[in-house]
Amino acid sequence: MLKKILIANRGEIAVRIIRACAELGVRSVAIYTEPDRYALHVKRADEAYSIGEDPLAGYLDLRRLVNLAVETGCDAIHPGYGFLSENAELAKVCSERGIKFIGPAGEVIDKMGDKTAARASMVAAGVPVTPGTDSNLKGIDHAVEVAEQIGYPVMLKATSGGGGRGIRRCDSEKELRHQYPRVISEATKAFGSAEVFMEKCIVDPKHIEVQVLADDHGNVIHLFERDCSIQRRNQKLVEIAPSPQLSTEQRNYIGDLAVRAAKAVNYANAGTVEFLFANNEFYFMEMNTRVQVEHTITEEITGVDIVREQIRIAAGLPLSYRQEEIKHLGYALQFRINAEDPKNDFLPSFGRITRYYAPGGPGVRTDTAIYTGYTIPPYFDSMCLKLVVWALNWEDALQRGARALDDMRVQGVKTTAHYYQQILEHPQFRQAEFNTSFVASHPELLNYSEKRRPREVAVAVAAAIAAYAGI
Ligand code: ADP
Ligand code: ADP
Ligand code: MG
Image (cartoon, rainbow, N blue to C red; front, side):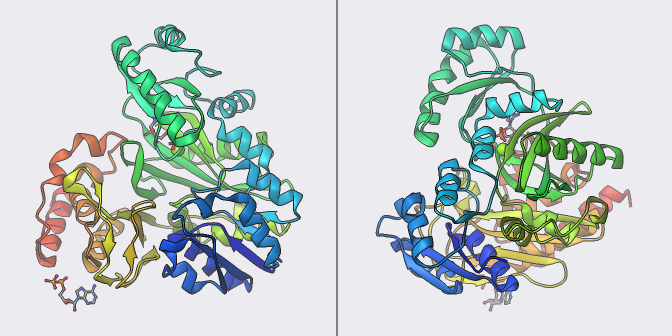
């Protein structure tokens, strides 16, 4: 087993990894920049080291982090998600310095981080991909030519993109000419690469992704799927496992497809294969070579601790489970509680948390790094808490979600919590009949009163259930 892990991240995911370390008897080392001096991950880790004044630079300074890992006697680095998690260079520098990188090999990160290269590998492996270009676009004229072949609407996508950025839908040549330079500039700023490619726009798809685990001994398994269709501007807000709409046959098909995708690139460690699902067809979209924000819901339905498996895999151990031992039970939902004002175009709302009460009771889990008195700094992602609920069936999971959102208090900053209550009450959501357009096509859900009292919410939810059950 590994002895000591440097966690190259912050916030809730750093805390999540520290928890896994504690349960495995592995020492944890936190890093922090000045605005994070009082952050929870710093308090909870066994050791913590400052990596500079600048809010962000230290978290991205891979050579400095590897040096620190060596100096502090760590045998591994866990990158979490975001920051350096999909940086192949970090994986390579780690292996040169004798530090285990908790993720796949650098070459695999490189291949899957380039969306056109990833598409090519999948085509070779017989995995269906979204129709589109096999290489990057050479300029606007090339883009127009390709769009005419594929047929509008098309998606312009940054080849190195992530986090829902650098993606634009174009319905006509005029729109394509308008968006093309914008996507290039966004891609250059956000990902340091001006490469873009094109896919057919799948209209009103569901986003279905499969969690996979692979070890260094050739074992690859999947942990079923998640439905992440509830998105705003291509960014996930609410995630569900398993998908309430897939049949067992479709579930097994997509699971096998994800395993095939992982095997095709010699994948090791935890990863997620993302698909679009429309008209009963699945299309490979991309593979994320790291732990995902929504790994929690898969943990709830399968009982598998994904971060623990990541650490075991990096230690060279075989997977703890065979495919036939993986079962799923009930439904789990994750609400990304962002410090944002949904009524003001989801504008980030940073500042001091004057009061935080965690929701509790059966089937409720919170993954967060906030506490009463903590000040959310403006330099990082606005997600401040993940509220995860689990119940044996879909209706109970919805009800539990509504109750837990109502239990929770995050005061001092605006959050997306009330907005999620509106989503939960919507009949289309309750019947699981939603796709990636749900949020954009229901602006009326933003017209709610934040002053509603708990009983009012409970009555509204009961009414929605009665309507659904036809009572
Ligand atoms: P990222 O790397 O930013 O996560 P993805 O390629 O996974 O980018 O796409 C993010 C989201 O954008 C998807 O979940 C989906 O909602 C939308 N999207 C991406 N490609 C397409 C497409 N070809 N057709 C329709 N929607 C798409
Ligand atoms: P208000 O915002 O008007 O104070 P709240 O419903 O937020 O109303 O809280 C009322 C009081 O109930 C709070 O001052 C706090 O002491 C208590 N309280 C509220 N929510 C919780 C909770 N989830 N857990 C424990 N106590 C709570
Ligand atoms: Mg994605």
